[in-house]
Length: 216
Image (cartoon, rainbow, N blue to C red; front, side, top):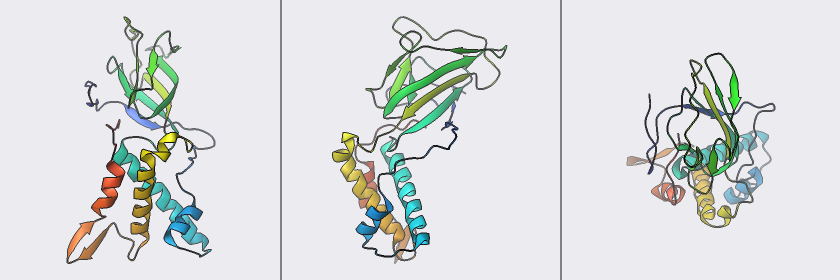
C-alpha cells in the first residue's frame, strides 16, 4: 500500500492509534456534566443519568471532530509505517508537538531522529507536517518487516485555546444541540414524522463549518 499527500490528498497507509500510557490518557472535555444539565434544564441528581450525559459529551465531541477534521482535545498518537510514505508526512490538526521519530532496522536496532537536525516540524499548517530539512531526504535503512517507523506526536486543542472563543463557539452550540437531540424522547439518532430523518441539518451545518481535511 502507498500513496502521496499534498493539497488535501492523504495516503491510505500507516496505522494510527492513541499512545498507550499508564494511566490511560484522559481528556479535558469541552463541557462538564453540570454545564449540559444547565443547557437541558435538568435538576436531577441521578448518577446513572450523569454517566449517560458524560457519554453523550464524549460522543458529541467525537462527532464534531469527524466533521471538523481537527482534534478538539489534546491527545498523543502513535503513527506507524513500514517505510517512509512521502517527503512531507501529514499529522492530525492542530499539531502541538512531535514527541518521537524512530525507526527500526532489519537487525532490530532502533535509531531516534533529532528535530531540526534530521527532520523539521511545521505546526502552522492545518494539518501540520514533518519533513526532512531543506535539501535532505529521509534516512535510508533496511527496515524491520513491520511497523519499522514510529512517529509519536501530540495534537488537539487545549480548553484555553483562543479558537474556542471564535469558531469554536459555534461548534460548542452544535455539540449542545446534538446532545439535546440524543437526550430527547426515544433517544434515537433519527425521528419519524411521516418520513424518517437523521439529526437536523442545523447541527451538521454548525459542526462542519470551518472544517479542514482529516488525517485518518
